[in-house]
Amino acid sequence: MTHARTAHVYARGPSNLFSSRVTAASYLLLLLVVMFATGCGGDRSQSQPTPKPLPTTTPAPSPTPAPSPTPAPSPTPAGGIVHFVPNSHAFWSNPANWTTTFGPAYANILLTGSNFLPCRGGPFALCYYSGPSSGTEDLSCTLTADGLYANCNCFDIPYGVYFVDINAILNHSVYENTVAQCGIDGSLCATLNSAPVCHSINQGTLIPGANLFSTFSFDCIPTNGIGQTGCTQAPYAGCMTAPCFKTGNPSIVQCSCPVFDGPYQVGQNNQACTLGDDLVWSAAYAPPTPPVAPIVSSAAAEAAAPAAVPSPGTCLPDAPGAVGCPLFVPGTTVLPPNSGVNCAKVCDEYGTCLQTAAVQTGYTCDATLCTDQCNDRDLLGTACSNLTQCDLSEIIKAETAAECSCCASQLCGCNPDAKTNKAIFALNQQQRNRGITPQCDVNGTLCGSP
Picture (cartoon, rainbow, N blue to C red):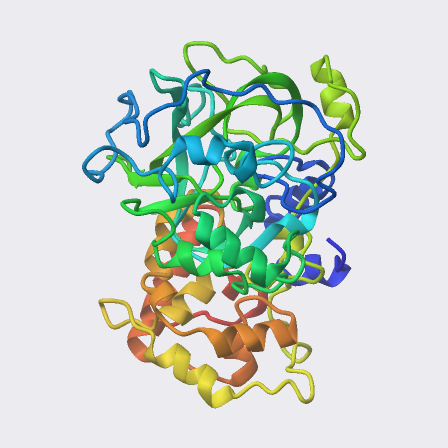
């Protein structure tokens, strides 16, 4: 993060809020090294470890994954789950179509921080912690019978800021369009939703038949942590942009992630690289820079892997933790001169974006989103309902210009109606009941009324 500021920490809330959100996210800026990836930037002529090809025979397109022990996914198209576009494992496994010299898109290779493209919307899946079957929630990744895929249980995140590795986009035409607009390393798309892949994910069109798609976000770091364990060559699930489906558990989705055989890093400390019982990690690989001879031990792999995190170059409105902009500070946070922001349009976007209950969802989302934790994903789903269907361009423009989060209504003096104020009041109390400090208690804004 190149724009970290003390003011960010102060303005995101009091110390009890930042002990969970900002501190953990700041820690991640030193340790995060996995999750996604397929290096689309960098020098493709460099030497590198040679990944072991996965199947020895060419598989038929669209194999149907073996059943998972968790609730079955929603119905999928005839012929099984569509994993790629084009839906051919042979196409994506062909080195001529790899996005980096280290492996195909589904290997989730990361070469540089700018490979992460920032997006805002949802819903999306978070598979960063998936692999083992132990824990308070079953986040297991179970291999299919043919070993080509893993059924991974992942967190369902209803709305927020997320990141896509430009090299791990499993729709080839969307990948090409994104590279054309963002550059081979993604560095030309540092602002929210400037990458074409963001639109495809938010509109649910990236891969046919899927309810949502796997990406990365900082949302669950306060409760689930962050870290790094380097592992030598073995199969792992490359879940970035994989298709995901609702299950019987409203907080968990199941993603069908392609499996790659190669070195990788797990995004938590001191983990066993081999899980057993047909389980694999959801992981990624950040090759050493510069590449070195093949790594022969987990300790060497961990030491050689570069620290790599989303690096937007400035704070991102509404993102959690250290990558996010601060909350509104009354009397201090203002629109800069000549920002070009049309406040009448900002207020119109707030006033006309409605939930099914006619609540103005821009206000309720702002009141909840920038203080949410992983344990209130259901509240966030209610607060931000229908927001992806609305035009928020002027709201995002205002927050980007003023470098603040969940703040456009305060910047422009927009006011919610009585029904929306009542919904805000209730959401604030529900966050308090879960040990979360709402924005109202941080800066006295978006408090609502009973």
